[in-house]
Image (cartoon, rainbow, N blue to C red):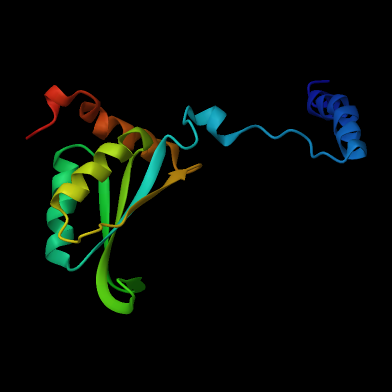
Length: 154
């Protein structure tokens, strides 16, 4: 008899699945975020370009020390092609990929602008909708002190 329970539960859900198919909408799927406790979009990946590795490392170390980010990856030797002051430019740069809570993106942007050598620093961010839940929780844990300015290192 216990072996019939899984079969019976699938049969009971069959009418809902058939109704969903007939209506043209897919059956409801459980949200991956619901099981993990992660709120989609609460972590962002911010991107900053730097003129060289020295500048990128200095900024990366500072944002992690100030707890404005949990982690920064440096991607060397990217080529950027852009228009600047009416001219098409081509430069070798270093791309920083910065993982931070979305709530800290404004403070991260302000800090980067204050130390970056470019006249107009590129600071853009995209929300992270899904990912490895333990990692996403870690991003929040590592940066928690940044929400209380009295605990941020100078």
